[in-house]
Image (cartoon, rainbow, N blue to C red; front, side, top):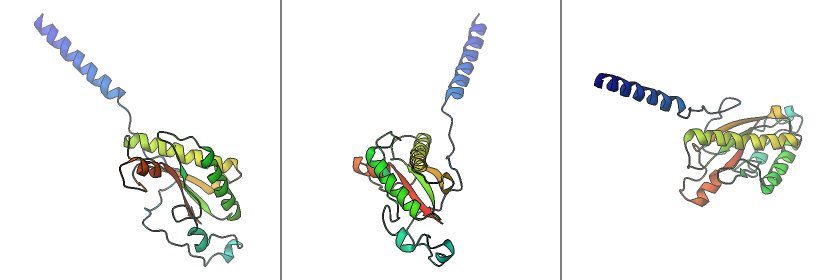
Length: 180
């Protein structure tokens, strides 16, 4: 009887271990619609030598140095644990869409970012939701989807390395990296 109880206990423990492992959250890979851009260390003006080849509507160094995090498009901020667009975010995206309509040869990577709280997997998924929300709204305003790609950096590339609400609020964003 003792041997049966030991065997039963061992079998029960093995089944519980398999259940725990099987129900554990799966690691989600970084979600991207293309290769990730190189890390941003400094904003460099784009080479303007090819502007004439682009019909006069090309991106110039002056355009890139205009706004946002050193670029022509302003970042969109999000609330804690949110990927929905606020009225303020929609107004910023409307201005970004106008810039994109005026610079039809520009391509944009919409980067989703989060604050330092939460797991890597959770923040990668949330960053992707934020990037897609911004991209989808730009598309609804008439920007061609083929000009936009999304990538999530989760909490891996903070704008502000601080550890308080002000820093976290700055890090919860969609950033727009302009390329040609």
